[in-house]
Amino acid sequence: MGILILIIIIAVAGYFVSLRIHPLARCGLCKGTGRHSGSVYTYASRRCRKCGGSGRKDRFGKRFFG
Image (cartoon, rainbow, N blue to C red; front, side, top):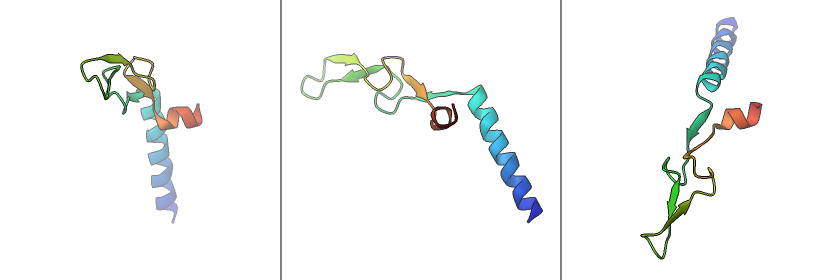
């Protein structure tokens, strides 16, 4: 039982270190391009609304844990 708790603590600590090193993830809506194509006029594009045109967004843990 003690080994299981130790493994969980190490995994959680590793996740927090990963959040510290890589706080941003690729935007799923624009797939990291920062641009979103129109559905009717496919040649037109605009800034992605979800990421604001950066192509990156905060990871879930970064938003949740601050």
